[in-house]
Amino acid sequence: MTRGDKFLILILVLGSLLSMVIFTDRGLLTERAYVSVQVNGQEVQKIQLDKTMVGKTVRVETEGGYNLIEIGDGRIRVLEADCRDQIDVLQGWISKPGETLVCLPHRLILQIIDPAEVDDIDHINY
Image (cartoon, rainbow, N blue to C red):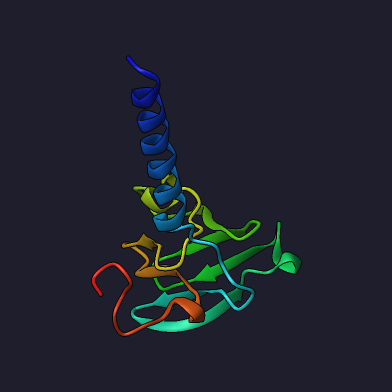
């Protein structure tokens, strides 16, 4: 392996790392990001994902039961629910715009919405 080969390999590695940094979706939330709480397809509450809400819990009552939502630092999860399957609790934290948590027995949807990310055409397909 010559000195030129080593230089070429180094350039290729650095180029690939740089492209990963540039094209990776970081999923960083802006200050206007919120969680849309929907029951039966209707938005019943908006929860801001700011520093003042960290560590707080919100109880959502539906016809089927309740869900206890925990708010973290730029993320959210279902901490507790009285549904039988507990899939919403097992899903864990979500933190990126567009991610959702769903509790089918209670017809509850939690979706992170960032107004800065809302476009008619997404950046991947454009």
